[in-house]
Image 1 (tube, helix red, strand yellow):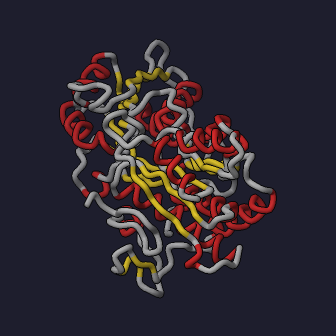
Image 2: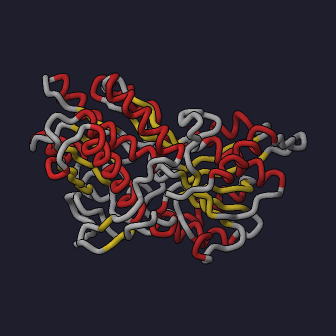
Length: 392
């Protein structure tokens, strides 16, 4: 994968060197819209703690948070209404935390040209559809998901890895593909197993987290994987059900594991069942943007930030990381360290062709690697994976 090491280096230097002094008595107010609960032990809590990081490191910063911003939990509420309220409370910056908020945050940005907006995981700046006061932000979590897949394949005894997917879109297919590529590499090139002996199956629940009566129950879907002989489940959900189910199964004597997603301390929920967690670290990029907005220097851009491979778990520099879990063996940890170093050094490119989509069409031809645009817009799962690539 091609990524901007220069951009990351510039951002890290900026974060370390820039100090914005706000005028006494004039706090910098920013709003944060979360798709789930702020204490979900997952995606929304990771963003909430990113906002708290800004409050800690930017003197005078004050956050306004509205969580559970989705049609089920807050029927009738629109994003522009939520932003109107934040604007009335003095917010100069609003961060919309989920891809699902795209239409609403675009409308809000048009209604409030005096404010700055960040859409997390969107791409309207890339496509030229964004108003001048809206930028996009995401982390290249794909690397951490490759590490998750690698850890899963190093651990499985049955050769059967399940992937618990949320809803279906380009992002969720992209990160599922990354997990598969990491698993496939470990299975074939480290363990020396036959490709046909690895099963990697994706099951989608229908949303980022469980909504009773709306989504499939992730507890049941994770349990079904284990009932069918899968001994490792990699989660793509915003919440930690896969790990909790794996922990309960281990307590009952089953030799199974899971990898939760997005929230760094998630392994604490079932330590011995946890192989590790790929996670977002929103504090550093949120702080960079908040400082720039406060200083009046922010320029909207499409920022898709790689991990800091010098220390992928540095809380002050790396937008994405992977925290090995207590369930991961020492042998697997050592192999994972080698794998991670190779990814960071550029000596291992899992997106080098030839690669094919599930229906056999070519994704990346032989002789080159995938471009950022090819990676971002991901229409299918990869060949070798089981499960649906689309709704039909």
